[in-house]
Length: 155
Image 1 (tube, rainbow, N blue to C red):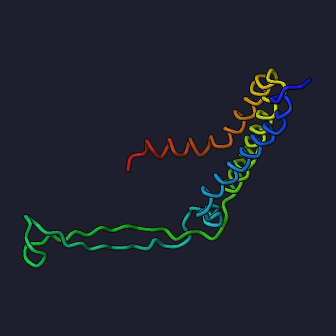
Image 2 (image 1 turned 45 degrees about the horizontal axis):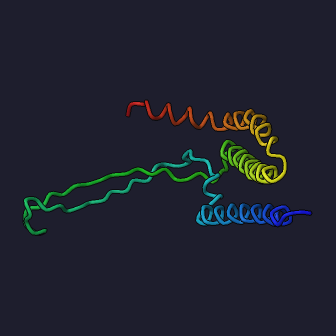
Image 3 (image 1 turned 30 degrees about the horizontal axis):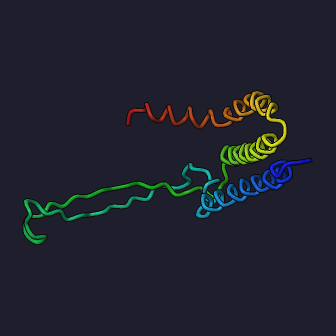
């Protein structure tokens, strides 16, 4: 004789997996809604001369009206035109990030599935995938080194 919990366990398991996957899909839809992959994968390096934009602002001094005592400040920014070439490092990084994200998504499904069956295997799975994520993190090591180098550069 089986109990009600044992009879409904497959429904609970599949319901949990469906909710997990729908939640991941909705999260991806919200997060990537405004993403422009074509721009994100373009090379950052300039191809032509920089364009200069000057913004002139009138600032009042001592609360005087804008016509009397005003200081004129100028802010100049230089923008490099975007290159039309795709960056190999950005494409490789994107592919690596997608592979790692899909692997993590699948791992979540497997762990949820195993929690309803053989809970003892969850610890073994988690121990064995740690090296994969460490190797995947190496994919972003050049980016991290570049950011650290630029943080300590003097202007």
